Amino acid sequence: MKNNIGFEDVMKVNYNHVFTIQPARPVTYFGVGAIKKIDDIAKSLVEKDLDNLIIVTDPTIWKATNVEQFIKPALENNKIRYTIYDKVRPNPTYESCDELASLAKNLGAKVLLSVGGGSHTDTAKTAAALVKYPQSNAKQLYEEIIMINDAIPLVCINTTHGTGSEVDNFAVAQSDGGYKPLIAGPALYPMYTIEDPTLTLTLPKKQIISTSLDAFNHSFEAATTKTRNPYSAMLSETAIRLVAKWIYVANLEPENVIPRYWLMYASILGGISFDIGLLHLTHALEHPISALNPKAVHGIGLTSIFPAVLNVTYKVFPELSAKLLSPIIPELEGVVGEAEYAEKKIEQWFFDLGATEKLGDLGFKNSDLPKLVENAMTSPMSKILFDYAPVEVNESLVKTIFERSLSRR
Image (cartoon, rainbow, N blue to C red; front, side, top):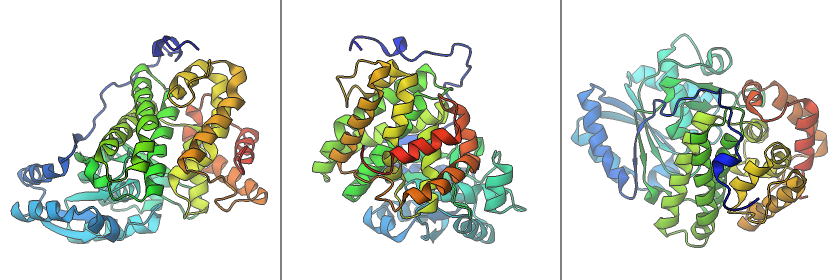
């Protein structure tokens, strides 16, 4: 594929697909020092009579990021009552979401302020909706209602460069049955979001990699769904280029804020991209992985299976895939016969970054494949995302992807 080919030449636009260029989205403050905007946000909340708030976080993030020195004075100076809920866990469960919702109802909370990454935002989003659906619990919300049209307001302070949840209208939680369904709806857009790169400087190196590669996966998937569009695809292309350029620097210089700035910006672009263009196979198949093994980090679960998914996607969109991956694999020419080569090269890139886990390393064996396949095929989220995949999805395809992901190619 010639490098001078434009993005519009390779993405095969569906000209009859009508999409929204500017969906409802939070007022997002981005940049070094953006955390100081919490005072303006607090004043705005008071003006809207939203003066009773729960901070949704965990002890590690609350102390390590030093956000307390900004948040507490802003709330106290504006006479906003607040309670700290610091029990957020990775891969939030129905039970944990119900617990926060119960606290919010009992305290008469008017706003939930999430401080953390995707798990914190998803927990807060779920609880915010449950306050407005008092006859339902989290299980019913995720498995019966799904489309959320009402929730108490949310404010998100993001502390990673990977989630995207702070700028989209989705949330996920872990069910009792080994899968992670989703809820979605306009009420789940936060009112305000703060994206300050300095808040990511305390991320452990493993999370630098896993969150950045989560943003990479968001971007590639959103650009290759059936509902892809020029806007989301261009956002994705930029996000992938930024991740490819800055992820190494962030890993080598963890105290340097400049790579964190660009990685957080890439994460925002990826989040907006999949908010508009949606996701497909990689996220649909990863959620059974982290649901069956809650210790599996989401971003690492994605990288364990992305190469095998790429093998499938590349055969449908060779030119587009080559264009998206050109910052990482510049020699790709955009022909179908390169699919396996692209699969091996992207896996090598992940390994070079330190994301070396395959499904076997995450505790899965051949004997676990039937359960993974079953959960993927029956998960409420998969049933939604499979419809947006660029290929027809069946059990055979899902099994093949999991099989190819057990160990290094």
